[in-house]
Length: 296
Image (cartoon, rainbow, N blue to C red; front, side, top):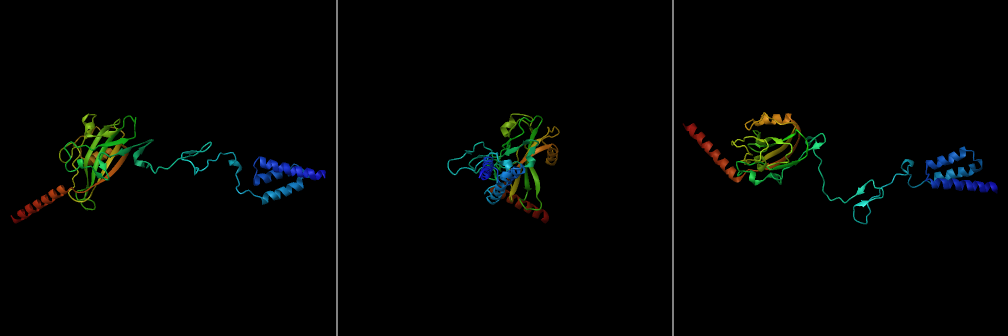
């Protein structure tokens, strides 16, 4: 009777030890084997029975011993408004507003700095604002803003606007890339470009367009759909060798050689009705002159 009571006490004590320390699966079996190895002869038959019970009654979820004391962040409660903060939180659950942030491209970054271009004052709904088209003034400057590279000493900015489909529009075989505006040596502490900003000084160089003006050439295609590329350049240093009459191809070469990062925005422009009519009239005049020259 005394031996029976001792075996019962041994099993109950072992079971209590296992529950107290949340031993499950292999950990519990290891505990049983440890007790057997210590020559607890009086408990041996009962411990063998306990081992069999542990193998049969496996827990529904086996919790790894290495994660036993790690706090778990529950999923958001279906009741109550977010944000929901769990005790000892590792994750904070918040409501998704639907707004996403597009990460910058590799070309927009240099080191830990990235540049972002905001062309709302020049491009809207995928097209160019009307004040920059056929009726643009002689002192027109594209209004651009940007962020990034704050506090970067010795850095300069530059801007280029190119027509990728000059002169016949998208798909024509004899097209070329035509520069219609460029500005260089924009100080590193500037965060915008506009006619008022340029007029205030700062050493900015504006390229001369085909009409002989140091400004944006009026965007007035006469045929086809034209794609415009607006690029903000971050340059490692100023470019003192540039002047208003420097060819556009040479300007691009120097920008690319001094480039640290750049951000680009695209727009599309369709022919203006008045511009198309004027172009058609000029073509008729050219054809008429050719016929007259042939008759002579």
